[in-house]
Length: 70
Image 1 (cartoon, helix red, strand yellow):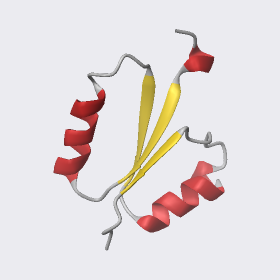
Image 2 (cartoon, rainbow, N blue to C red):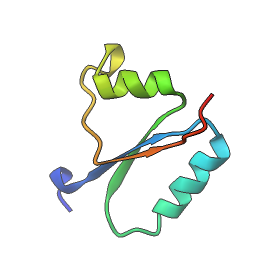
Image 3 (cartoon, rainbow, N blue to C red):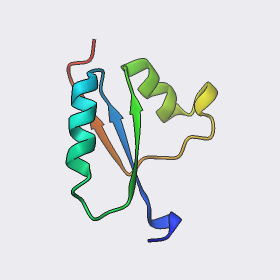
Image 4 (cartoon, one colour):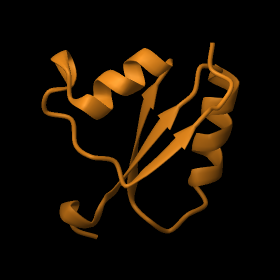
């Protein structure tokens, strides 16, 4: 699969166990992907707005969001 076809999954999750569980579940897919993790809502918004250190961040193909973030 070419680099251009690689999918980006943006995971917004504060629980390390849940992050690990999701990454394990994704291993069974046949699609090549990169998982980018934000640990809280502020980091997620900075990434999506391409603020500061995320100025060159790529737009994710899929966002998985923990609705119970602190």
